[in-house]
Image (tube, rainbow, N blue to C red):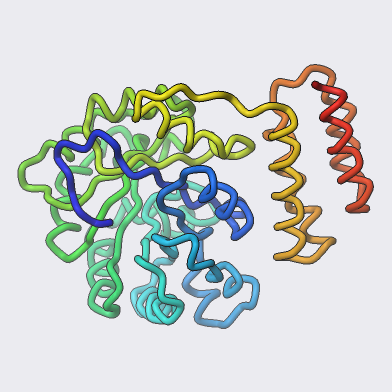
Length: 323
């Protein structure tokens, strides 16, 4: 998996780690629809070493998901190393370090992309984690902290030198959050850098299969990571593969959308119990049926119903309502 290919015409497709989104249920859905590599939700190192049950549940995965990575975050070297060792016991294919999340609750505490303000500490923690485990370690990061500091090329070389086996780069700075347009030119420069020999995965604004194909033709990356665009549209992975293979892709029918949403709902309930499973699914309904006319009233029902059988009945009616 962690083999660089300078002539990559069919990059691996990664499902991006997303907090409260990429749980076991959603990852299973995406894996079945063409995602090559999946990664856990963010795992807080401090919570993990304190044995917080909710955090430990994020480590659960199926052998069918492989290759699978568990992503950890934090800002303390000892805690990050201990967490990495705990994660290793679950036998993921790789451990990913989150130096990219811009959310205030993470970056504001000096973790995630907040660590891009302290590169020496970032490198120190990363090297310590690499040395503390036998499992391959990767990193997800951003172009820099802000537009005045896009020192990503130098950083990637240093991360490679201390033993990182693959790097995912989101084409924005920490300050940009998710605003503006992702800049892939620096990602391309890193991929074409003759000193870089580890796999480079690009991330940011891959909203369609056409966009994935465009970025790959320009930059010949080893992997392309898809995040928010997969929410409600996990078919995007198969769409990408069809385009890469020059095959015709047929968009899912309403019946297929309903059936997959129902499958996702039942998986969520199986994983988290009926009450929490229903609550967790509420963030997905709008995305599954995005673009449908007159959907607002049905969406309100989906967001307020608390009986699984009533929700299943309502979703089943969509097949005839929107046929």
